[in-house]
Image (cartoon, rainbow, N blue to C red):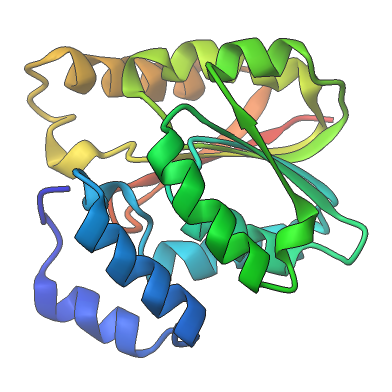
Length: 212
C-alpha cells in the first residue's frame, strides 16, 4: 500500500490504539519476512477497528473474504463470543500455513474455519444469516463478492470492505484494480438496500449497513 496519510499522524493514531500482543507482533514480523506482498496485511488500527465492529454489532457469525496470514481473522475472532464463528476464505497455501500456526496459539483460533479455494465458490456453499462480512480479497471481484454475499447478510447486518480509497488512486484511476475499486464504491453508493459511509481509515474502509 502506497502511503497517502501523513506518517506522523498515522503513528500518533497507532500510539493511541490498544497495542498489539506478542502473538500479533510475531505474526506481523513473519508475514513481512516470508510473504511477497506483506502490505496486504491489515495493521493494528484496522485490526482493532474490525474487532470493535464485531463487538459493537454483537456479531456471532462472520465471513471474511481474503484471510492472507490471518491477522484480521484473529482480531475479529477476539471480538466474537465463545460460541461465535468466523469463516475465512483464502487461496494461497503459504499464507494458510502461517495463519494456521498462529490460530493454534490463540484461545480464539478455534472460532475460525478456513475455507481454501475461490471465495465465490465457497459463498455458494454457505447459508445465512451472517452478521458481518469483511471483503479484503482480489479487487476485480469486489462487486461480485458483494452481490453474492449480501443475500446471506441479515437485515441490520454490516458489510465492511477494505482498500476502498486505494492509496488515493480512486481520484485518477488507471489500471484494472483502480477501476474495480471505483466501480465497487459506486455500486455501494447507489445501492438502496444499504446505508453506507466511506471512512479514511488506513487505505479506506467502506461500511454498508443492510436496511431492515
